[in-house]
Length: 281
Length: 172
Figure: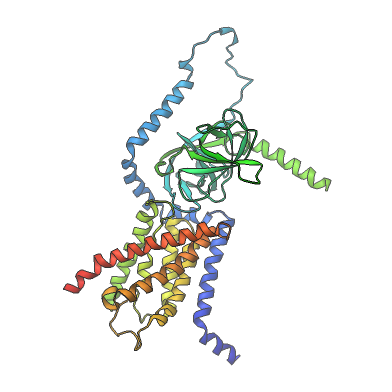
């Protein structure tokens, strides 16, 4: 017993170190598992107000760009407005539309905090579960995809940006529909990589890439980027494409959250398949 | 003594805020992420007991983590450097120990001592930090590049602050 005490006293520094380091690691791993729940609550209470103030200031710095972007968005929306169309054949006009059902709903949000310099970047938005945000919802901006919601608190949500080591988004070449996986390998926030693109794709430099609609988060056809370069590495059976992202992640301010109204149905269906697979085993 | 505590507290607040509000959003070039808050840990007095240094480092890491939204990462790296600090100081100690009133600054210890001290300090911290951020050795060399380049940028900032804030004091 006495020896133990002597040992403890003599090595108190190492023990304290192990204790504190263990605590840090616990937080780190815990937060990997629970996906930044701790950070969200911190964003709520402690840094929330500081971020809010700062973002009020910095909002002025890129007002000009924001206005241009909003204008483009407005133009795109007006193009889709009923007033911009004329009916060629009134006989086919159907008011109570039973053929098309709305699948995606859009919710506006503002960026409260954002980074592009880390290996795994997150974005915090000022919308939370009280406004109907749920994990795995997609986030897009006027000029393309931004990320996927990971964690939600009452009034904020944390978005895993495309610039994250674990982000994988299914993207396709717009003109022929062949698809691959979009990844970010760190470094420059303006470029990402599209891997596993089959070699029968008629891809060329300058081609547009859009979301394929295969994942849960994004509808089909949201802008992703432009092909900057592509190559077939020796031994690979697929192309690796260098993608110029169309979203400027440094200047995010106004974004849209996408809610899939059929998500639950699809999830249930998947679950049923999983269960019957497990039963078959 | 009290004066000393106030000075260190101010340095803590200024550096953590500069880190969390300015440097976090600065993007000079890919891979360049300076962590100037280390300067606060570097400049804690020589005679501060190691356990206190470690606890202060742990708390500093926590506040930086809150700004970065990465609870645990900076805490772990700072605790490590808090633990190593007494060893680094022992290793670099002059033959007859540190003078009673000396501070770990350029003006008290000279350029060669300070640069060695800062380089070891920053390298250990950044190494721990960036590999924890990756949480694997998957992209070993690209992470190593981040350590080296970010380390150099931190070093540059540390040296610049030494020029800005400490040379004029000597003249007084």
